[in-house]
Length: 126
Image 1 (cartoon, rainbow, N blue to C red):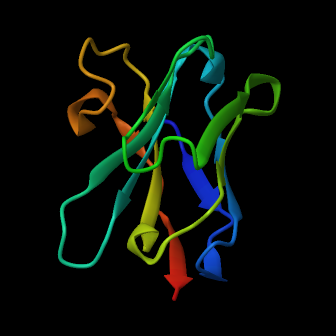
Image 2 (cartoon, one colour):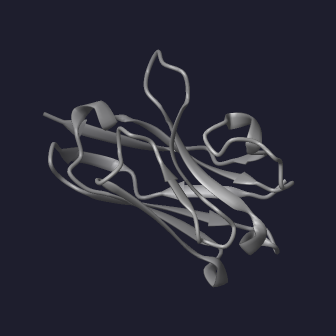
């Protein structure tokens, strides 16, 4: 199991920005499809964004498209999530996830991802 550690969460006002980072320990990090999910209190974990192992393809949830941007730096085993124009409804624990087995499934499905970080809290005040 690859180890994933998220960072960069915090408290911001609506309209503000945060940049989340996910550091991975896997030797073959560059071969992993990666994703961010989030979970608000009392709600199920929901898909935010995914990026293919090559970085050629990205997939955004409608709720964040145009505001969030995912990127990866494979040489540093790091994935970033730039979040702009934050809204109170973005408040959640954000989780980094990795598909370490090349599972053939939808990018938005939690079943695709084997390794998960512990999450980082993002709170957006109004």
